[in-house]
Length: 382
Image 1 (tube, helix red, strand yellow):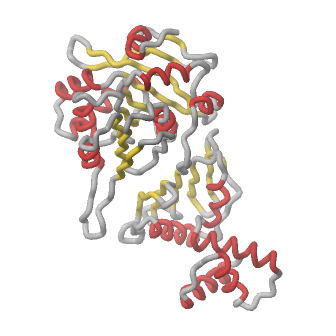
Image 2: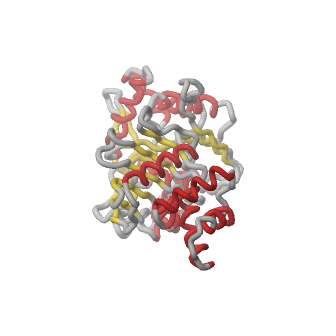
Image 3: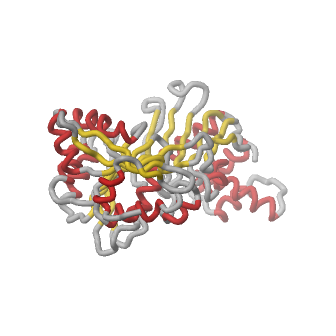
């Protein structure tokens, strides 16, 4: 499909006001006077429609069930993650301008602006896919486009065990953690599977309980009958209408949550979450970026400082409101797994530290020195 033909069809649809339906695209294609058979017209119409209203050449990749991320770093450098690390795909854009057009169209679909005056965007597409794009000259050489796929359903613990994310026997322990209404955080690096695991664990919550989600971008998809979802909103072009994650946490507390969930703690909202966990909201949870489970208290301390909490106050709230950290990593082969589970304890100096309780092994969790404390919390013996 040539760039000239695509542009001609685009112009005809714009002038005529025809919707880019399969029939509309096919009619515009035939109007170009090309001698094409029915099969060729259907194939070309499908390709053109993907370019006009879909994700263009990326559509087949995003449709694959195993794909989690699609990353475009140049017209001929489209990378895909199928759960085992990044692979270079065979998808190629005609030129850098085609990548830019796709990024700008996707941004417009999400109601966001992407141009020379605002050269980057972070948004959610109507189907839930997270997109991030950066235009040249901030992006050197070509528009950079990153798409994170949000699957319409959560995985079960059985599926995560089969995939190697949870070790054999680990499902029972994680299920006991949820059933005991223990407050916990899921930690890990970018792409380690935090949202996937949290969605799965929320699906284990008793169906009579009300889950209220507060997220910067709606990604959690728990398999649960009573979920209320709140999503933050950026300011418009005039700088008005901003709704922060901290605003959402405060609203969520007024919505009678049985389980308050903060999709990702990365700012001042950590103060409100810790306050909620200390005022009767048992079983609250969320995710946080951290290199290790042991680094989580320091990470929360840094976030709490931004919210105006001094060190002593934060550690006091942390000790009283949070009990467990479940940490995920990606191994050298790109596979995600629950590397360790830590419990929190307060030292003589008043500061909270983590204590290893479970560590991943191919044949099941290994029990560490914090296991007895975790066992008392969840009421589950090996």
